Amino acid sequence: MNENMNITETRLILNTIGVIPKKSLGQNFLIDRNVLIKIINEAEISNEETILEIGAGLGALTTELEKKAKKVYAYEIDKILYQYLKDKFSTSTNVEIINADALKSNIPPHDKIVSNIPYTITGPILEKFFYKENSPVGILIIENSLSKRILDTKKYKNFSRIGVTFNAFMDLINKYQISRNCFYPIPGIDLALIKIRPKTTLKSFLKEPIKRKYFIEFIAGITPYKNKTLSNSLNLYIKNKTSLAFTKTDIIKFIKSNSISDEKVFHKEIDELIATCELLFEFTN
Image 1 (cartoon, rainbow, N blue to C red):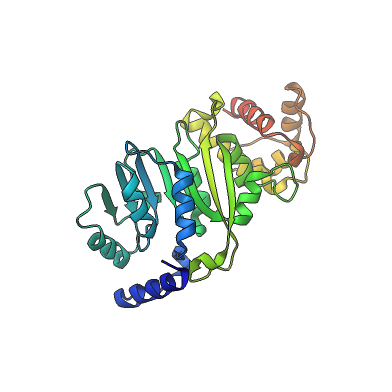
Image 2: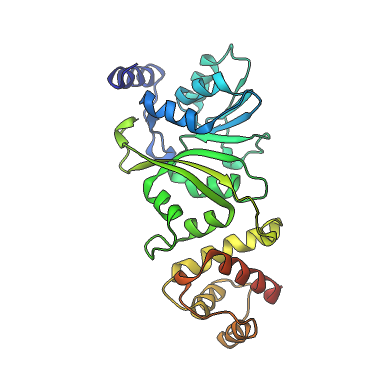
């Protein structure tokens, strides 16, 4: 099936079922079979694995997953697309179509997440499905600028909340840039296919849900002040948290008593930030 034929078919189906792609839902449908094959090859799915797909769309990727996996849970929030998918996979023995917001759902157990995810909610998807103990392998299409932040956090420009948090929990295995012309409608951003897997050894502090939540909030709180010293960034972070009542003097005492280097935040290694957060958790609780 060539690309032009696929564009034609995609438009025809969308017109027939009455769907106008919504930018708010990140509805950009994959129309290039070569990219589909690349996703499936990277996923290395065995016939014993359960796959989660978020944002199944018109089911182009779902069709390929159906051929490989033991079970596919395909989530689609759009009611019209959901009904289309229900009809399309009505005779399938291993595909279950679910009309729900994956971010607000109790997801069945799965081994891998293989998705052209809605780009507008990449951060929340990573946080819910991957920032935890025993997270799945992921093969995802995401915004290319996010993949750069994930790939190299040592550059000032790339040092960010999503880059630091991702690298605390996950490793990026492979990355491929994908032309925006492989989608309909053509998105206004460059895209990348990434393969990610959980760290072999997750820091013990990040294994407990309460501490993990504290860490994610800590990184979100200090990275906006990445060009400031740790003491100044912590001071600003704590000022924004009404539940914490610590002065700048308290913060400097905390840093000195724990022999923490008071350098600019973006110079910090990720392991240093995790260790600092653990000490701060003990200091503030």
